[in-house]
Length: 290
Image (cartoon, rainbow, N blue to C red; front, side, top):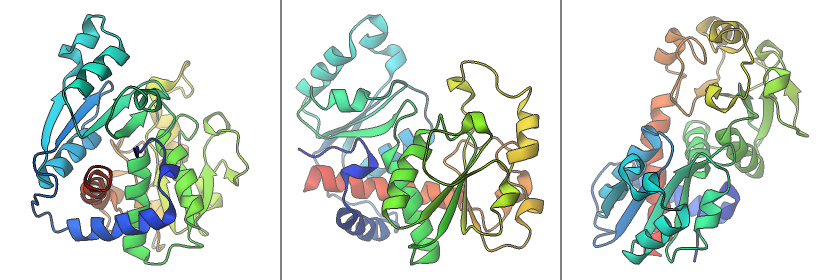
């Protein structure tokens, strides 16, 4: 049985076929590909975009969606994660989408259920569908992506989005550069910088990340405005350069990205949201219908 726990779970050939289907699904039409199939979403961490994106994707394919409200579920009454999974599995779902604050939970759950598990984000470990939709968005803009340079900017060490993108973009032939203060950088062999100005003239894509304040044991910056002085992507910084801007959301306005850049046509943030539904439709179709 196939699962999507990490971005490397799909080969480049599989991703190529996935993107062909996603391109078709951009028409936003409802289909019956997953009619009479059931998708369960369990989000143990807050989510607006990813959860709604998966649920819209499943419904557009004709699937029934059961969304488990964890705050009202038995897990809040002491039921273990594994018992919750076993009980859900007994209901016969065709796929389960899970997000959890602890790294590795989707991988563990995959051993307790008889349907595909899709990782909607686990701790600071992985967010594979985000990486897929980011690569899809870059491809949609540039066409050929091999050799393109991507600067990932911000709280990289605590970011599951960064982890999945580093793996996937590198495998797809893009050059990944990391830009962050020293305490936000992971141990890595990739090129690293501490100032955006050092790389701005050499990159094709800037991927700004949200500051993961909830994952910091101690306060790193005196304030977010101090962080923004060094790492906010501003229209002044971008100038008239031919660079596209990505962000996984939610955006801290004027901390991650300034108001002017949010409205700039080079910002592909809303394109990422649209593309995310199509890519997740393709993922659900691949794991359930095939």
